Image 1: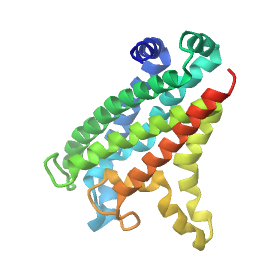
Image 2: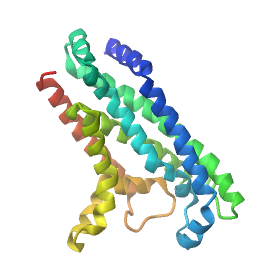
Image 3: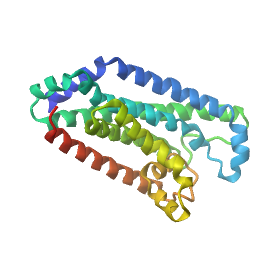
Image 4: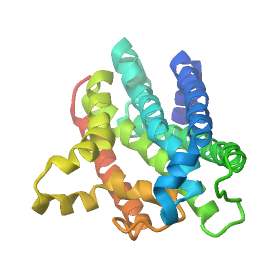
Length: 251
């Protein structure tokens, strides 16, 4: 397993797409934080008592989840696109070790990068909120650290979900389209469904899990950490399917 991890680490860090994705994660993510924080007065006026400065700073997760998703997908599909996967599986015939190494590395990179982004977004966003004259928060305030860590955990789960999708579909476009549908399209279309169906969306994992990034309770998702646990279960199911597909399907 250690050899598989080392081999996957060498491949991951040698890909330009890895560094492009990480650079984009921080450049775009923190840029969104700065822009939204500098225009927070209207958001505060609209929110009133429901204003949550922590959640406002961490809204960068909306774009960040797509970027870490692309990174997770490319961990797998880049090898299928070039045919390198055949060499990899020849060198390591036990396919589950190859995928396990990819999962571990994707999780490690996503946890470190995602957590760093969440802390940076909070630490940059709160002083900007103070400059706008709206209530802000500190890391020592109740629930703040939990929300920041929740953001990093959420991004790591999205990265793992993406690894599973990339393994099952073996194509970047298909895996990315599926990921966009899961994290963006379904939540966006929830309001178009009949009222008797809308209650089902309370259990959509990415919707409820994202509520963990705030400190003010969301009446629609009163137990966001249970939703985050539900997302983890869904990710585990996708990864289990990915292991089965990689083991049984020819490359």
